Length: 154
Image (cartoon, rainbow, N blue to C red; front, side, top):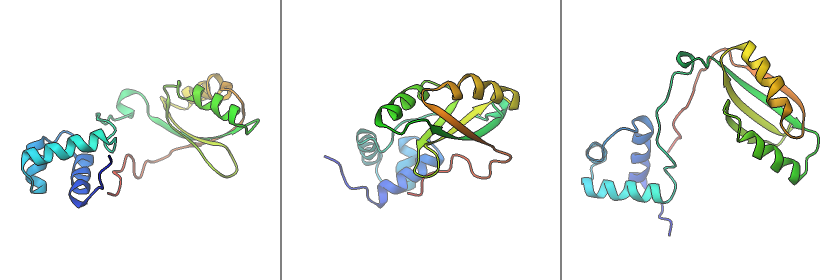
């Protein structure tokens, strides 16, 4: 059974988004709970899939992925089967960080990272445009990341 998220859960989630390596004892002290109560809340938040994972944030440029692009994708057909084929295929593309089906003038918004513009040209031609059902694309290269990986406003 899902438990209502209260202000203590929200505070814990906010702290964890800023510092995912905080120990249970540190969380407990910051929130004003005993370590066992904090541990129980943490276990519950994970069991309910409110906390969906843990990981390190990397500097993309320092690992050779300096170009961030957003790409509008339009499909040639907008049927459930076409959506499924595209979604299945795009999930297998490692350069794609996010892909969202959207309402509006195109079908999907893709967020991807590659080394540079030459790598993007290859990625566009060899990968994105060859995905099932892709009719057209429109690319937006990011000049500056103003806010990236912001915590959710819990």
